[in-house]
Image 1 (cartoon, rainbow, N blue to C red):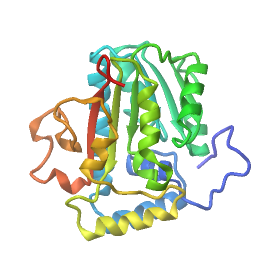
Image 2: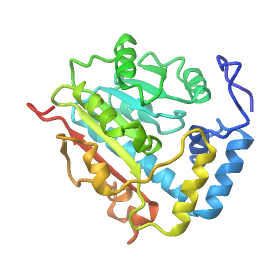
Image 3: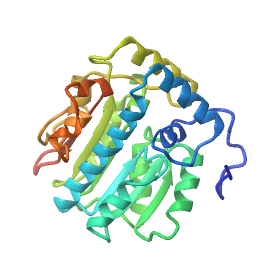
Image 4: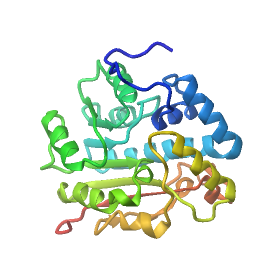
Amino acid sequence: MQLPDGLPADIDLTRPSAARVYDYFLGGAHNFEIDRHLAEQIAGMTPNLAETMRAGRAFLRRGVRMLVQDGIDQFLDIGSGIPTVGNVHEVAQAINPEARIVYVDIDPVAVAHSRSILSDNEYTRVIHADLREPDRILAEAEKSGLLDLGRPVAVLLAGVVHFIPDADRPAEILATLRAATVPGSYLLLSHSTYEDQPPEMLDAQRLSARTATEITLRSRADITAFFGDFTIVEPGVVHLPLWRPDDPSDHDDHPERLGAFGAVGRHDRGVR
């Protein structure tokens, strides 16, 4: 595929990228042979993985719709990857054309693609940054002119916190992000888990070490703790297909097989 404009000259294209592997599983075109090779290896070990990726994107879409309907008109999407079909700006702006979205990703290729894709959308910005730098992300998001952190905002962390190992103190990162929001704001989070998972899921986790972003699987309790004192809205921290499905028939009797939890928390008045 043709490289996007603005790609750093020193980018290592011999190593797969989690963002581009994810793009491949979602049917996107912004990935390389090295990414597709790893994706096929992982898929061979965990046949449900592509379905898990799609379930994660569907959860994100349902969450964004709920947030816009609740009056949220600005979003900080950290670990956004490549904004393929059905991403945050499309969902939010279909309801509120002036909804503002700041995308953040660590992968320079994903960022370059995102800027190219969104060049004509005046209500979006793309920041190249690492989730491990929450203060920098918050400062750049406000500097973009799109987000006003003095008003309610939705912080979206869909399928990204599991790339932060315990040694990098993800709880502190989440606390910083929560503390920057005002009452009426929301935190949306989805995260891979080891609970109720077969051995092949754990084997696939080890394959993720071949990218620059190895996955750390966590428990429901660990994931719940990331919300701090935010009020977790119904139905709570649940397997992805169970979070406010568009139709009860959208999932089977074993939603746990997709290996991830999702939830949305609200910053209620007086809570930090």
